[in-house]
Amino acid sequence: MVQHLTPRPAAAAAASPVDERLPPGRTALLGFQHVLVMYAGVVVVPILVGAGLGLSEDRIAALISIDLVLAGVGTLLQALGLWKLGIRMPLVVGAASNGIVPMILVGREHGLGTMYGSLLVGGVVWMVAAPYFSRLLRLFPAVVTGTVIALIGLTLIPVGLRMIAGSDPTAPGYGDLGRLALAGFTITLMAVFYRVLRGFLGQLSILLAIVIGAAAGWAFDPSALSDVGHGPLVSVATPSHLGHLGFHVPSILLFLVIVFVLMVEGAGQGLAVGEVLDKRVGPADITRLLRVDGLLTALSGVFGGFVYTTFGQNIGLIALTGVRSRFPVAAGGAFLVVLGFVHPIGQVMAAIPSPVVGAAAVVTFSALAVSGIQLLSKVDYSRSSNLLIVMLGLSIGLVPAAAPTFYVQMPEWTQMFLKSGVATGTVVAVLLNLVFHELGGRRGDQRPGSPAPGQG
Image (cartoon, rainbow, N blue to C red; front, side, top):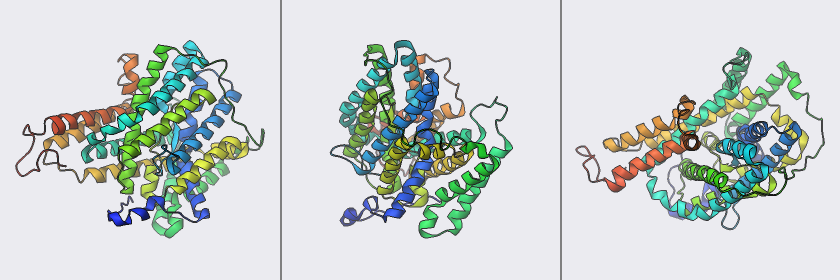
């Protein structure tokens, strides 16, 4: 189901499909489909942080509202660009799960003011360091980029599975057959729609399946819509922190570790979307991408948001639909802003059964993993070093997804990094590529007939 464009000549660069402008109605529907795919990933972080800090339901609702607005602004910046901000590609922005633990730790120990002060400093450092970090792109050849893309998809698939079966295996309703049936029904609809529908309707296969799947879920459990219509029509996003910002050096250093991890992941997301779009991504593009993540994180220190990062959730959707234009994603960013302000719309979105959203997530994340596998298929495995890079990058990167408690005995400060499979796998692949191809390319890691060092 994953498609790739063939390389275009340089003369056609101005007509890049990334810059294609679609009819308004089509743009809006495709944008809404992007929102549905990534919505759960956006709202889960404020829910977990709010609960971890012991905030009231009203405060958590305010956090979700602020989060949606900031995520929408970040998505608009990445898709459309503004000055030296934004990669100008179809990428979405959302709250990073990597920031949950440090926010709870600092918030509980030193107060919300110190937590948001640390976010502000971390975001500023992020923006300043972006151009220097982007110069490391030469360390991301096809063997590394393919590993990272596949790893992003493979580590995200369990997220969708947990949305289907439940997040707690010890809970009484875990793996409920009704939830599994609803997810299976939704996935079946996606496959059928993708097979039989053509043109624009085929590009909306996931959206149509989610709508029908949600309707089926609500038909069996109407109580899911019981809260819709209650509360104000417009929910104004206001700063949620109390008191003045505080600045505590150890807390700031803790957040800077997360910033480094997310810079690694962000560079990987930028390279991944470039591969799916068949469009070259250079250091300047990655710099603009990372600046948006840093800006949103810095703004969170003022408006009470979270640590923000460019998501890879929608890259698989791009591969599935074949729509490479950045403007539907910009429309999705506008939808996120509206969801942050218009209360009833957000309530309906929140009421979509999680097995339905999880089914969409599993399909799109799988498509992203396939994109990485397609890129890896072009790598020269007659060089044992390439085989080793892929094996170790994937195996180490999948540890947190396959065995979440694997690093439980490690020092707490290292777990901030080790729990991010994408970050650990990326660092392993980059370091091995550096040792074998940049520093040790002439050490005889070739087999007879393989290309010269540095190729593949």
